[in-house]
Length: 418
Image (cartoon, rainbow, N blue to C red):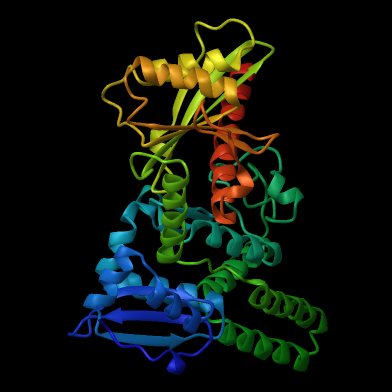
């Protein structure tokens, strides 16, 4: 196993590269605090991380000035070297890219599939979609740009919010040469920000300001000063790094282990399905099944059901119908644990559905009663108070229940609107 002296690793933002004996990158990551991140790796019980530490023989550290620079440096290195352990943790289709399209006023888009667009500039791959969106949101508040792929007759909401110029996506709008140049200058600055070169960009702006002042073009210099201050603000505000995949994986694994132990589950809850019901006084009756794999939401396994046999407001019997129909599909992979949104009555009917399919001994079942914060897991035993679980596990239970609730409400509303 690789030997690492933590005292020699700086407590600064940056990129770290684990390498094999031939100095080839095995894994490339980023961190707000390099020393804390490597220390976490050394004490982690993640199987993938242990495997990495066993085969790695070198660790290279690259310090950066800030977190923004770290994320773009990491992206550039992953693209250049394509390390095997980065691929083990994340499929290519899950990476994010920022593209500049070939429209008259180029659009800036975040996408998984850049090949679906006609673009002239691409940045990526990036591992954190939510981080990228937050990053672009900060930039856009200072340097407006457009992301409307289709033009429209009315000015869009982004224009009203000051996030785009309006003329960039409004149909039949007569655009002046000055407006074009204003938009293209913003794109040019955004490109430099995405390259992480804040220092060079600020230096260029200061030089242009000095030149304008010498020519007595005070108004233009003042406009550039506002841009300069905006760039500085972006640099200060950007806090876009999240714990990397190893950290998240390790935390979720501990949560799932705690669920297995406290609920006396037969199997490790690798696949969890969450069920919820929605209706309006018995009308527009729907149910959904939301799936989580290794603790992470799996959108490909979302199942939607229109309730057919229960005509009155009765959530428990609706749960029973949904589960009966779900387990009539032998081709669908079975979960290790089912969570029902509801209390003891919902648990009882769900249990009956499992027993009728001889699945009650194979699949764990719990019901989460939100008002009382109790977990029902056995009709012959007292429910477990949510507070008896660790805080990460409490949050996980609330999170997956909330996810199902949000999706079923959305599905229900769509049916009502139709």
